[in-house]
Amino acid sequence: MDNSFLGPEEQETKRIVDALYEAYFDGDARAMIDLMSDDVWIRFLGREDFRGKSRAREFFTQNNPMLEELNFEIDKLIIDGTHAAAVWSETARTIHGNSYENHGVDVFEVGDGQIVSIHENNDINVHRSHFGRS
Image (cartoon, rainbow, N blue to C red; front, side, top):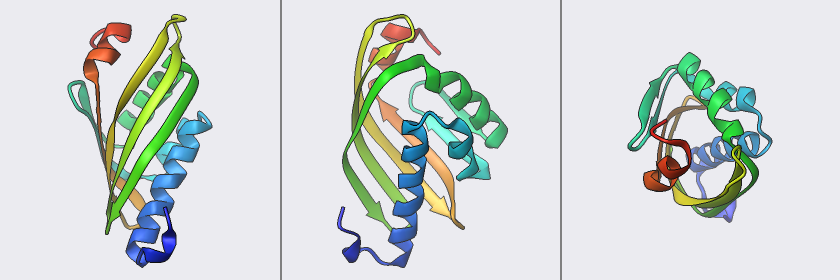
């Protein structure tokens, strides 16, 4: 994405979203949590809502290691003020040794230099076929 067309608010949103994905790619749940507000709201469509950093920490620490050899691609990143949407696809191997492929969109809200909310929308049926109703 060409940053020259983004205003200051959009540049800050993009910087924070990029930092979150970089921490995710590095498997660094702590760095992910550090980017979030104390009362962050994380919603995984069809799964569960997590409110607050402690719940987010618990989730990401347990969930992120479930996929190994992750190839996560952001196909499109859309920024509008303090909101962003990342259209993505991923392939991986599950901790059970099975091939995994999914796609979705993450919707972010950023405020005061932190992530206020993340709403992840993916193919929940793919997730459940590998991990049950977690």
